[in-house]
Image (cartoon, rainbow, N blue to C red):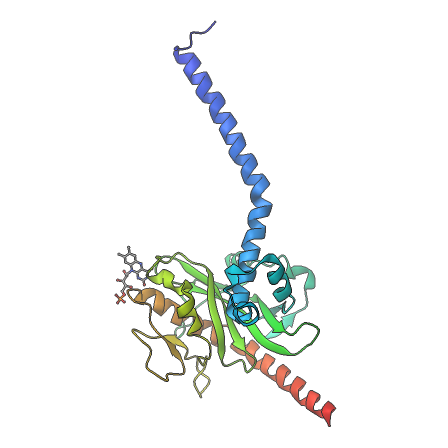
Length: 278
Ligand SMILES: Cc1cc2nc3c(=O)[nH]c(=O)nc-3n(C[C@H](O)[C@H](O)[C@H](O)COP(=O)(O)O)c2cc1C
């Protein structure tokens, strides 16, 4: 029998421990994957609800304080479609909606295009050809109250991924939230501060000539400025990144063409509704 303090015994124990531990870790990783994916999805749903102001409006709380029941109730307001950004038209692929992954679409050369806009630059190499957009409608009606656009761009430490919610005029911002970023807590990480996020409500996305103009100011935004929110102190690079990404996604390289189409759709619906009332 092998001695307990022999080299062979020590190595055998270490080997058995390695196998047992790696089995335990990989079993946990595989069995928890479903739950992790569900949590990522839930977090995105909460962020959409945050950007739309529905959580505060209906329940008076931030989206991360909502109960599951409240989230389910509010999710009935939200629907989604896929849009080809170049044509501004919807892509008819209901079965693809659930499977859509922005990160995968952007990474695949077949489903994305390079970002080469010299004026509006989000600091990212590519964007998907097709984006998944969300609508806020009163349950049981077709009237669009808000549209929620996924946006992303570089901050200081990495890419910020978020949602830009627009009111039904498609020119006024309802809210902006980031569900994933690597910015420093207390500096660039203040993009998550509810007080800063609340400043976006009512800012104009475009100037009168139709050029994207919403921005994060350097320092406190001038009183009465329609486009600007306060800068994040000590985080000029993150602030600039947020300005760049909003303006890029508002431009014709981003959602500009689609928003033009959607505006017509909303106006047509309005005029046929008023025809119906006559
Ligand atoms: C540890 C560390 C973390 C930082 N994190 C951020 C950040 O998340 N976002 C940012 O814009 N600047 C960050 N900065 C500061 C930038 O390096 C840069 O100084 C700053 O953006 C300039 O902003 P200011 O002109 O408002 O001071 C960080 C600096 C240090 C040392």
